[in-house]
Image (cartoon, rainbow over all chains, first blue to last red; front, top):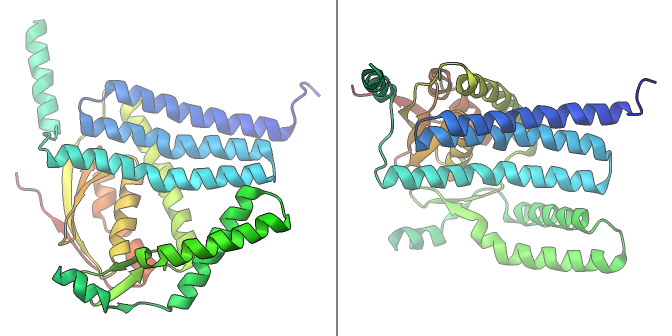
Length: 118
Length: 191
């Protein structure tokens, strides 16, 4: 044996790291995207696949115990409840008339930035 | 008020007995999983609390349809169909996640944010909930608003995400899940 880890621990680590990748991607998206609505999409990244992979990793690490079952329950509830939060936030913004940025606006902004620099 | 009154003598879809028993079993299983031991005391507590909860909550879990002629049970969905739908949704999530991750972390932001609209009409109000929730859950699309006529307003981040919502596969899956006829029309964008 090269190292003291069991196959289960290695698998769990791979899954949790995969989940972290999506969490990091979500954070990067949060910083880079231009407006409110697009940033909500970035949060969707972490709340679905990030959460899913992390929980699968933890369940594999835990094995077939009651704790693993509880984790699956938490995961299910997160899955059902999280979109409601995103939806209510975006609905509130949309109803109160927050303007939706489109690709045309993005091009315009780029042109203005270019003008300032030259 | 008129809607409320007509909803009171509405016909409940499915058998209330089956609904009550399945809800009771679900709650009892949830309780037992949280307790984690098989002692008599907790089993009796669980039976009593599950029964009381079902008795209190069952009337709240019936939602009337639009004209108020029928009432649908919120969890009244075929279990095996729902599981196969969930598996399909998970796979869609993985694809959409990778798509959004690529778009947001590429050198140039590869995004095309816009609002897309479509009409989706079914009788069961829960189908709207499941569709709107599934769309929001998928990264790259967020449901902004659903109105009484079944007009969905979706904010899409990338071109691929917008096409995924408008090609009708989601709508077909949700309508199949509830075994209902559906109407689906895309509202063309005004330039």
